[in-house]
Length: 182
Image 1 (tube, one colour):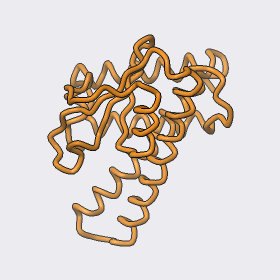
Image 2 (cartoon, rainbow, N blue to C red; image 1 turned 90 degrees about the horizontal axis):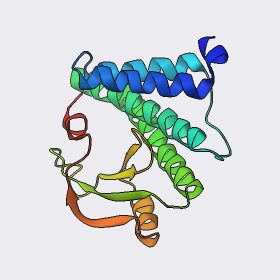
Image 3 (spheres, rainbow, N blue to C red; image 1 turned 90 degrees about the vertical axis):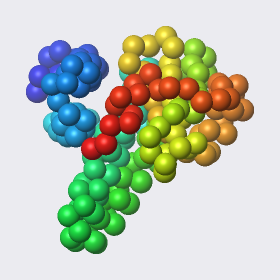
Image 4 (spheres, rainbow, N blue to C red; image 1 turned 30 degrees about the horizontal axis):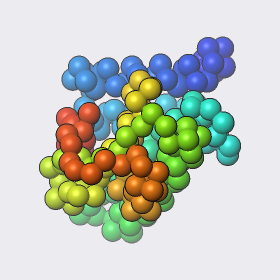
């Protein structure tokens, strides 16, 4: 496999950056962005790391779970729109929720590794009524393209306890992506 000669993390970050550029340039849609990320993670066939002792491992874990969460949630939405196969909708929705929870745990692992330094978090403005006053952004200030999102209440409480959370509402650093439907 290609990443074995180039290095797993270098391959992972290069692919991630490439997809971000393609999305920003309008070359791919948000749905394609999610599908390509999912396909890449599946192709790499590298499971998340149990122990996070580097930024790279933490970012990989976050991205792994985030990709799966969004992909399965997207499948659930597609099934719901088609108004068919309700049991598959429930299955994929549950899978998405499971991976979102794992993503939040992975986020916490990385933030702990970084000792909650060099980061800030805040609620973001969203077009979705469902996500209003729930979705917040966590930005790692010393790393490129290190922007995380969550609506987890328990993670929010930890961010507040650690003094990372800023009260008030801001525009997301990736506002166009956040507010684009897929």
